[in-house]
Length: 130
Image 1 (cartoon, rainbow, N blue to C red):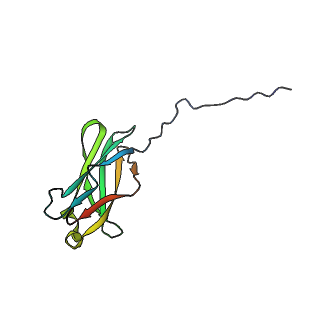
Image 2: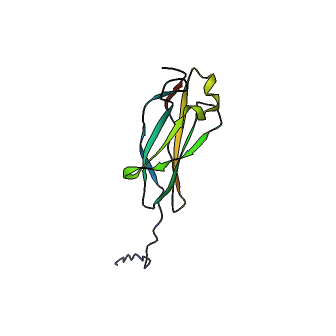
Image 3: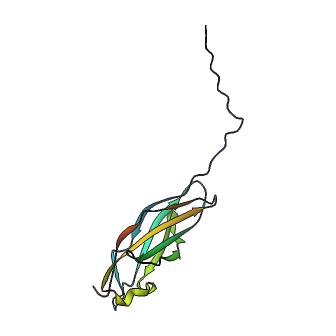
């Protein structure tokens, strides 16, 4: 008694699209100010890519635990990196803040219509002065 096992494969294997990736998220510095200090914004840069070309990336930010989320489209820069700024004067409550944590996350999309989000980052501090 012999057992014969056969495997049947389709002529063409269906290739599934994969979502984009976001890695190497890097802020230009860890605190910024709404007062007279020249550091009124922070640039967030991230490496975004994948098998399907990127169609865009968005940076979302807010004062920690408060809404609304502010969004800004990121722009492509060198080597697959995308960047955008969080500006202190874009945050409505900025004049009432002496010191606050700014939360942010990124979303990238590709031509296949798939998206990826980063975890929530809370490593930015907005202050009225240094």
